[in-house]
Length: 389
Image (cartoon, helix red, strand yellow):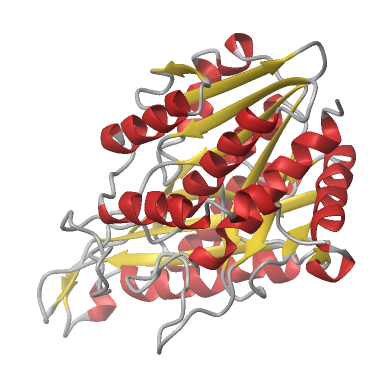
């Protein structure tokens, strides 16, 4: 057992692709150079190419006889972050950085495409989906709206994300929720401002906001089933401009993370009920603007079993972590899983090196090139298993 020999032979080439993409990061819907590189490589491999879905998306297709059709997806975009690494392939674009490993995801899927185009050890159709704008841009949703699965029909769709902290070369695979839904909120507390030395003549929105922040947590601790998961995080509080003035209002902003759709649906009314109750106690009012974002990423049972089998067939049982604890992070591959059954897995990249390791969205992050053949071999094994020749 181990990575596919033919893929291991072009490990250095995949590393070169990955580091080139890392050196030239592009933000959501601006991934022009990255898309050009992907299309150039797919053309070099002899793969049919379609461009333009969600502006910068690329889809490569290999048809090899009659059989099922599957989709394999990687993301293209970087983050608006200043890189602090000093190695040779560090970002050359100020304020932009591949801090989430999408460069590695793209390189691994290109590696799988190269191998499958030459081996064709499957029967059916494989669509290699290179998606823009995962980082807050909803590129997956836009590709679907623009006809992704009508133009490229698939019976199932699969995704992969690198996972710092998991041993390098291991996979986390499980059915059900694996990543959370991510929503945003703006909450305004309206009181009555005045002189800070005369608080009895005011309705202090800052004091009320402090109570609201604490009381919102009772939604997770007292209004949610103990085995369900909800995160309500107030991440911004803005109020006042002077040392001696109590402001009229406080603006609060934050995020909500959930797994279950029914739980998610209840959160806005619960938040408003709690905030209005606290405000009423102090004679204040409030306004809530709740914005839904990415839905939860929920793996289907059959496709999760297919993914797990690919890992075990390739690497053995000791390289799979079954049913890992879901993450409260979010992922727009969720839209594809709403449209077609599939599975999203994690690929461990180890703890990283140096003081800062390789935490996702860190200015010190870098993808672990050692796992490139592992990820590409997983894709190839998944295809071989699901589309047997």
